[in-house]
Image 1: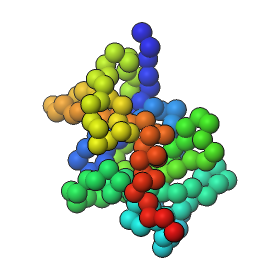
Image 2 (image 1 turned 60 degrees about the vertical axis):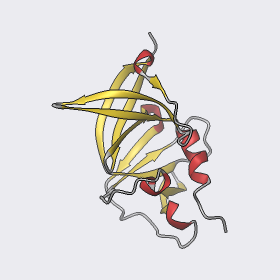
Image 3 (image 1 turned 90 degrees about the vertical axis):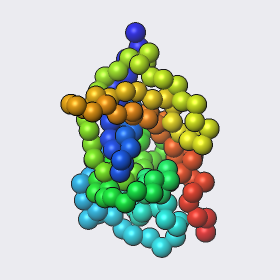
Image 4 (image 1 turned 135 degrees about the vertical axis):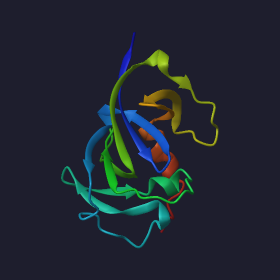
Length: 149
């Protein structure tokens, strides 16, 4: 069976995961983030990552999460073949998990083309539905939310 190692994280009250090979670093401070005044609410700012300047995206705004909350972490991501990385704001890292591809229930969500499927994750006494994100599709979707100059 084909196995996939994923990083599970929370954005406000929703759980997401992406392939661990896409997650490069977790930054627990906005100290290195440089605010910019273009790009609208979708673009939180810029920061240095692996010698490049990368965009940091406001994840709750992009995926339309209205609940109030904090997103104190920046997950720096880069997919193989991408020219440069990108940062996404998240609330918490839940951990790594190895799953089999058969555990993924395919997504039927037309409004969220970046979600490839869902898995069930048990966290002690609670069970959460975790949306599996395709990084490239997420970035394509995010681009539609960024104000153009």
